[in-house]
Length: 128
Image (cartoon, rainbow, N blue to C red; front, side, top):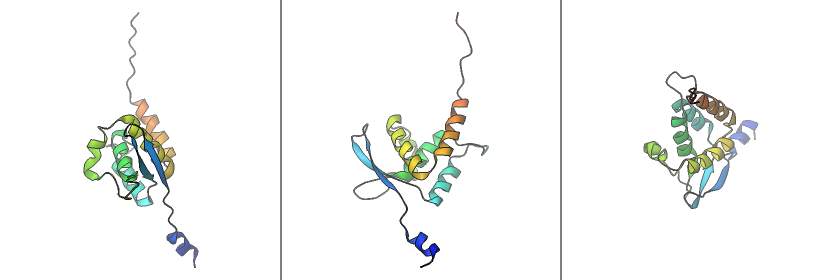
């Protein structure tokens, strides 16, 4: 069997059961495929295409990586992105951290966090 065939035959998607304490149950978080990663990064770009928009990135990753541990079905669909963003941020953060780690997106996450924090306006006024 060729190396190509051996690689293509491997189920290399990693899975992790994660307790979402805010919801009181576990979900299965899966790593993304290469196609899913490209889709998430493409749909999460800012208008100028130079960075990641966290408000777009979070629901994309949660949608792509969250599965029902009993049925194996994807929990959320394309129409759920706005609803996802209405959920507890700690729950979303738990899913994001695991999904980012399993999918090898640590570098992109660090860049997004850096750019996101640089857009927060700081209050330079002094009240002395």
